Image 1 (tube, helix red, strand yellow):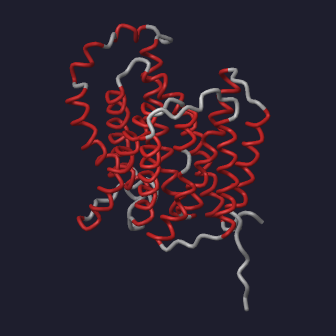
Image 2 (cartoon, rainbow, N blue to C red; image 1 turned 180 degrees about the vertical axis):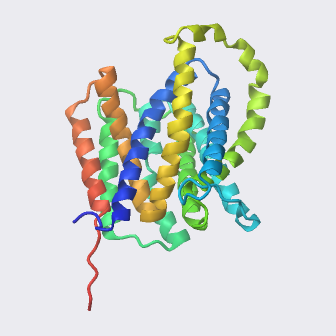
Image 3 (cartoon, rainbow, N blue to C red; image 1 turned 90 degrees about the horizontal axis):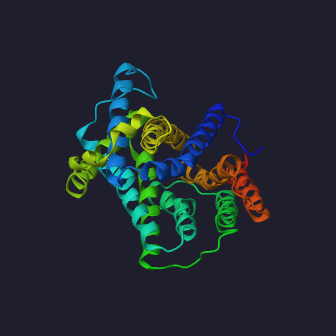
Length: 318
């Protein structure tokens, strides 16, 4: 059987799939939000409410193992500082600069989707996590599927500024380090607690940049009278930001953190490969984007690779 019979394993896989489905819509939501809102203003409008929402949930569900909010111990502060600095803060900055430096969004998206390839290396070195041959082969097959999915049908493969390649890999490393911190933080902290403190740290970096780069005066340039019309650009932008707040920044992150602690960094990050697959499906179903045969083959490879990656080796009793 490709998956363990342990119910926890099944729940973790379901949590990972749900989080990836939510995140697969994030790119579309961000695009619509940035059509009206400046980037750092959008980030502040996204993460300040998400932190407040988690604070409320954590205080109400303080006895919950998943949603309770535990007080941080000083000795664990470095772990949360590293996590919050790496993601969302550093990853989002590097991701933005990557898309700006590289001429082709396709190349940028492909490079940014390579975290499953680096995860086994970091997990083995920093966590002593056991990486099996099935993990490696599954990740390779799944990543080939991602390349087929993102590169097929594209007409622009130009690189542009080669620094963009380094920025993309730096972003991927930041995301992997964040996942390592999720694993290293003591189990006494709930998934909500980890995400709450990490996002609080990120805001400590985001808010000064927002203040000096865009500032509160930027709000005066936004025409709030558009809110009277539900289908106006501003209304759509704020609805997309609300989606990013509730679903992408709270629900998906909590589910991913919970699952990663159950299945490990390597197996959890392997599921990142299905994000572009779901994004392609949404673009096909709701925006009429054409999916050539190569993209469908890529999706099959992604799913097959995930099954291989999750395969449990039989341990001999001898």
